[in-house]
Image (tube, rainbow, N blue to C red; front, side, top):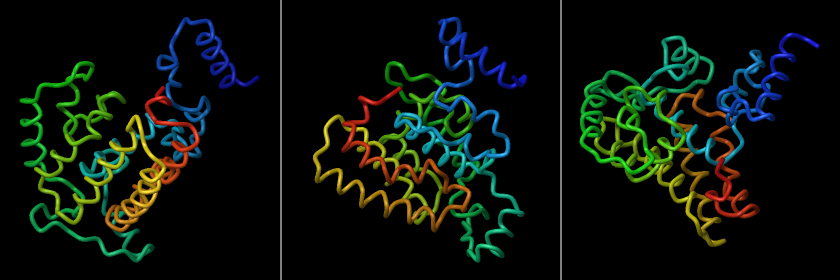
Length: 235
């Protein structure tokens, strides 16, 4: 047995015995082997449960508009998209950045606004820093952001209307998909609308935003039809 296998087996045994939680072991909401598959970094972003699928989609969207982390749009990425993918990158005349990137002044204004809000029970104060320190938010915090709150915040941002509208529609789609009751006709409507929303975002946002997480949103209405409302499937 390799050293890596011994480490994984030791952690799993401790989890089974109740000595540590899945989160402490590093496997909360992720397949056990993903943190070992360095040659498949995309697998790190893949979580096949509705709660983390929703929160990870919101997280990916925020990191994209903040131009942070692995979502940072460098000159190298710009050249790749323009030369290899033959895409024209639209720029925001105010910020001199791509239309999907929010300005620093807007981030400060939104953070100040969030400081004045009274948060619901169970939501951590980290939600107030969603635009400054998104890495501190829990999955439940992200679920609270995926609501009319997130839509209102994006509306007050300096994002170009062409970019913010599909983002807002995505947040509201995720919000309605979490409803406790949905009819078959509503599920059909959700299936059609998410395809349109993702198509708009694929045209506007950088290609790296399109991941397995965003693709799985297309199958979410079908999953709801088969397994029932999403709140019954939360981790």
